[in-house]
Image (cartoon, rainbow, N blue to C red; front, side, top):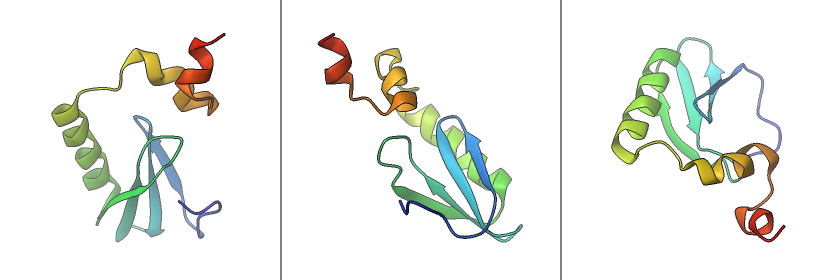
Length: 82
């Protein structure tokens, strides 16, 4: 993911970023931290949220063991060695 996204709003939803590329026409969904890779594109923010919900329903929520690394950027391996 680019360090700075182009102009537009970011929606943080269930650990994913939904970036507004063209208002009400085109949204890009980026994955969870730390990589935040581009995952999909949709036409509306609602469709993007529904896409994220489907993905979580298929894969299940992330393990509680990784939550701290999602928000701090510290790898899980470094946290367990403390």
